[in-house]
Amino acid sequence: MTEMLTNWAGNVRFSARQARRPASVAELQRLVAASPRVRAIGTGHSFSPIADTPGALISVAGLPKIIEIDASRPGVTVSAGLTYGELAAELHKQGYALRNLASLPQISVAGACATATHGSGNLIGNLATAVNRIEMVTAQGDLLTLSRPDSAEEFGGAVVALGSLGIITSLGLDLVPAFDLRQYVYDDVPLDQAIASLDEIFAAAYSVSLFTDWRRPVIRQVWLKQLAGPRGDDRTAVRGRSDAGSGWHGGTPADGQRHPVPGLPPAATTAQLGARGPWHERLPHFRPGFTPSAGTELQSEYLLPRERSREALEALARIGDVVAAVLQICEIRTVAADELWLSPSYRRDTIGLHFTWVADARAVMEVLTLVERQLAPLRPRPHWGKLFAAGPDVLDRCYDRLPDFRRLMYRYDPSGKFRNDFIDSCLGTGPGR
Ligand SMILES: Cc1cc2nc3c(=O)[nH]c(=O)nc-3n(C[C@H](O)[C@H](O)[C@H](O)COP(=O)(O)OP(=O)(O)OC[C@H]3O[C@@H](n4cnc5c(N)ncnc54)[C@H](O)[C@@H]3O)c2cc1C
Figure (cartoon, rainbow, N blue to C red):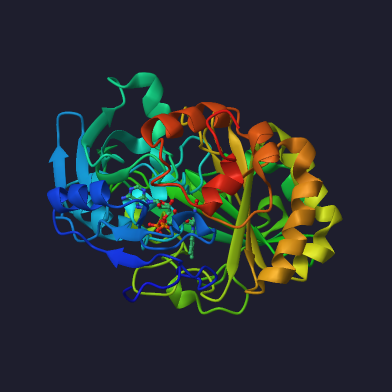
C-alpha cells in the first residue's frame, strides 16, 4: 500500500490491500482483468467511503496526459486523472471554458463527474453534464466507449456511476468560449429577507452562493459571480454593481476579501471586490495552492427541488441551534436539472444545502440524521461524495432511477468486482434488491 491510506479529510481509512498506478491503458486493462476486487480512486476528496475497496485501489493519474481540443464541436478529450485546475488553465490558454466548476480546483475530472459534483448557477448543470463521451475499462478488462448521442439511454446511467461500472480512462467534455467574471460579496442579508427574495437573489448572477452558520437569522455572505461584459465594455458589471449596491436585500457590500468559513484567512479565496478575471479564477471559491474550505472538517449536502427552497430553509431554521453546534458553515447553491440517473439534479431544478461540519464524526452523524428527518418530506437527495445516513429504502424513494442503475451495474459487473460496502449499503445487494 502506498502513501494514500486515507481520503483527503482523513475520516476514511481505505481497506485496500494494494494501491496501483498503471502507466498505460493496456497495463490498466491487464490489472483489472486479473483482480477479483478493484476500485478507482481520484484525488480522494470524497468524505463518504465511496472509493474504498478490499482489493486494489487504482489511480489513473499515471496514464498519459491528454488534453485534445476539437474546435468543431467545441469539445475536449481529457485523461480521467487530470484535475480541474490543470485542465482549466490549459483550456483558458486556448480560448475555451467549461460552463461550471466546483468550489475547489484540486479534484480529478473522473472522480468529480462520478459523484455529480457541482458548483452553483440556476442555468448551469453539475460538472457531469458537460460529459459527452467516456472511455472505460470494464470488469472483464475490455475497453468500452459510450457517447451521448450513440449510447443514448444507457449514457444517462453511466456518467454519474459512482465508480461502479468500470474504470474511466478518458472523458469528452463540452466546451464554451472562454469568459470573464466579476465576484462580489455582500454581508449580512437578513434570513427572512433572503427567504422572501430567494428567486431574485439566485437570479442575480451567473453563479450565486449563500453562506450561513445558523447561529443568527442572517445569511452571513452572499457571493455573486457575475458575467463581465466584453473587454472594453463593462456595462454588465456596472449594471450589476448598481443593482446590487448598498442596502441590497438588507445586506451591505463587503469592504474586503472574504473567506466563507468564519475566522479563516481570505488569502485562500478567489479574487472578489468586483475584480474582473477569467472563469477558472472566479468560479471556484478557493485558489489552487491553498487549502480549500477549512481543511479540518467533514461535509454533507442535500439536494432538493428548487420550488421547495422556502420550506427547506424554514425547516432547517427550526433546528438551527442543533445544527450550529457542529457546523462551521452552511452553503446554499442552485443547480440546473439534468438527465443523469444518479445525479441529485435528475429532472429537477435544484437547491443544494451543503454543510461543512466540525471533524467529529459521531456528533456529526447524530445531527445529520436529524437534518435528514427534518428534510424528509422534501425528498432530499444526498451528495454521494459526502456523509449521509440514508439507506437503500430512502435512497430508492429519492433517486427515481436507482432501480435502473442497479440493473445496469449488475449487467456491467455481475461478479461485483467494482462494488464495495458503501455501494451495497446504498443500493442493496442484487439487481432487483
Ligand atoms: C474541500 C472540499 C470541497 C468540495 N467542494 C465541492 C463542491 O463545491 N461541490 C461538490 O459537489 N462537491 C464538492 N466536494 C466533494 C468532491 O467534489 C467529490 O467528493 C468528488 O467526487 C471528489 O473527486 P475526487 O477526484 O477526489 O474523487 P474520489 O473521492 O477519489 O472518488 C470519488 C468516486 O469517483 C470514482 N472514481 C474516481 N476516479 C475514477 C475513474 N477514473 N473511473 C471511475 N470512477 C472513478 C471513485 O471510485 C469514487 O467512487 C468537495 C470536497 C472537498 C474535500
